[in-house]
Image (cartoon, rainbow over all chains, first blue to last red; front, side):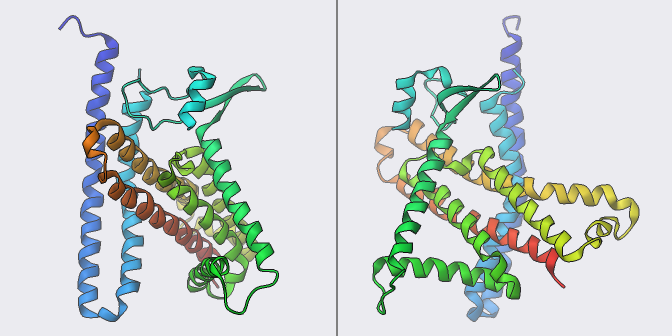
Length: 85
Length: 248
């Protein structure tokens, strides 16, 4: 244990932190799936409005994706920019 | 090509240095210069952004000359220009109604710039929008546009509306307004950066026989699909925020 340097410890903890940060992907995954499911139901009820529904669904999903991307950005920062070392 | 220039000048100018065996998706400094005592760099982002801008300017200068005497039956170039103008006009008209004429120029400009920037990953450039220094100004321009129109339309009510519905919600309202450009910028930046990183990982880490064919499919998703969607989202949100302020 004594040969672990300070820098190595920080790198290891950064990697763990990056892994924890991308757990944020759960939220957008659930949200996007729900939006897609609702859109599928809407197309089933009203097939004529398919193009409108698809556009609205994609827009909402792209906005819902943002929170997941914040987690991803933190992971990238920890892995590649290494602000703590 | 860009890595060639970079190694020619020397790797002294690498901003966010990657290890030699890591896949390469970082921003590299190509030319170093001093301004007010600070070391600054011409980066790969600058090169990409100049290429994108020149492409757009050249295309529209050619179109301007071409459209001075438009043909009754449109040719190829005229068709492309008409499709672009019609699509943007329709998009803005659907969302802004009677105010569309005032904003169609701005929306069209950022739409084309962001779209060409996003899909430039297909052509081997590092997308300019995968740099926070490009997307944040776009967000700030939108922020300025929103509040210019807010003050112009609502006069003093633009400021008093910050105290509604209750006066002690003022700090929360201010934070909500300031968060708009950052969320716009981070959304675009995060999406395009994640696509760039994915492509770099595929090109850098997989064995050679997997690199044939499979990256093409991923390019379609990460560069073309995600790029188009994010362009659309940026423009739609800009229009929604502006519309929110100038609605009667």
